[in-house]
Image (cartoon, rainbow, N blue to C red; front, side, top):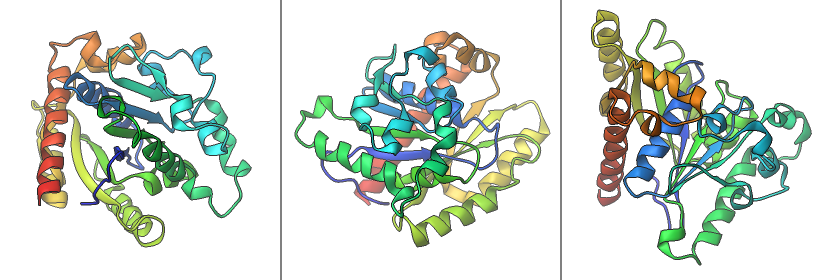
Length: 274
């Protein structure tokens, strides 16, 4: 496991080249769950659709500075971070400006813009009291291996991979693993798969159970024990601009994300002690 130094937040890219697997939902609700158990979390929205920002209650008109400004060099992460309704949870929002970033940034440092911003944040945090430092940075990636995702994977300590428990779920998993191996060989030698989370699981269907078994066979102990169930309340929450823990704390989806957050922290502690 790649270690973090004093002042550095553990940076996780939430990525899967397949769309519709629950990346944004995981970023929003994992961030909320981590904050609810005392961690200080910054969600970095790196998808031009800005769904993580919307799901955390940030209106499109209320995003004066975004991840576009970070990548373009116009502002740092702290300057762009906005508080959410969840104490301890902040977001650097995104909007459609990110669509043009690939053609605007042409220098050789283009895959490392976010990495440099994360390093600047770490340097800044070293002078702050511990209760004012971010413990986790969660990067919500777009569903493709483009410049935005390359920036996320170059900046991250590890990748958190959501996998949908539905037909074609395994499609692209080996491709994603190959991509991570390539990033490790060329851009970020310490990058690792932090864990795989099974999402949209329906225990009533044999298909969900079969997909879960196949994913566990492929990734082994990297797969979390916690499984995120298919849950109507989880699907409804973003349209209300709320994480599921605020929308319906008692539903199965909320409780699953709290368990996942706890499992992630426990795994982090075990790995650091190893």
